[in-house]
Length: 218
Length: 218
Image 1: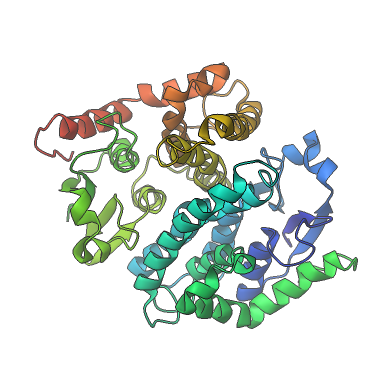
Image 2: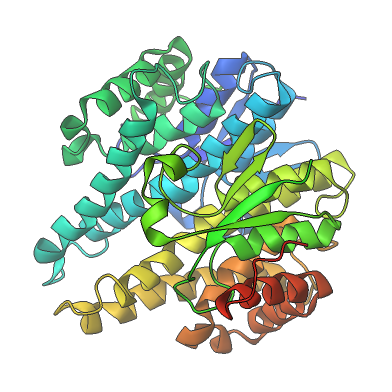
């Protein structure tokens, strides 16, 4: 049975690919699996029918028969566990790739979410202009550490994995801030992710929604 | 071979169990596996030898033969995959438990980390007193949604799982804020987690470090 994911009916980013359905679309494209998409309005996301799928009233969700999942990290992992292409075969390499999935979401993304919150929810607060440099410095610390580990490698640990998929997805949120440009090796790493044909297809699919075309899965 | 984890030589919380080694100790205790602990000073955490294990210069790490992992979520998952007791047997129930692991770390913990940052790193900033209520309200939103999903259940999805282990661990960071007391069902859920014998043993083990006793594993 083809799984169905949910995505924003109108993505807040207008199709720049930063909504979390893009990560899941990318995973499907990497492993070559078809999927269907159901669009959800902001109002519907907060209603009981959607909250039964996603307790925090967000997208994406994943439905396949009786199974319902949420959290883009968990959905990417579910896809990666079931189809070849996103996790290495060796047990140790697989565990390290999973470590990078958690690192992307638990260590690198939180300070980036703080920046998003500062620029959106706290945009008009008196303190925001003064506070932003502190938030940005916390992100710089993480990027500095990430660059040190990445070195001259193409991906974080051997071949491209679900860890890279999530790390690139998280880092893409920084593009407009200019912070990526301060770390050329990280910017190049993100560009390598974006250049993957699977990412290109995922990006095009979410963009077609923003352009008002019918919600195509794969 | 017995795995070795790292923990703070002097935990910033003085033994209240909020450092992330406690989550990993708890997982080892739930599955009844022995582990060793190596303590690391703040200075050593930032040096190349430790950064070779943990690129972000933090604890815990996990070493077992040639395998090196970091990220408490990834380590808990690694333990849960290899030993019975933290993930259900059924494929669907297992995927849902993993979803709650990611939900704890990616959806519930980030606003809690913002509060920690506001109270520690930004403690002396002019804006902090005015800003704290906004940060707390973002946490309240999550707790409200979590309470709605939990309902009258004992755990998030059937039997206790690694998802509950991480969710309780994340929520424990809120105890001193008073926010848990506003949500009695969440406070009771956290108390159920703390009452588990495995948690009690993990808590005692990390406390013994704070009290200056030798770093006992299990």
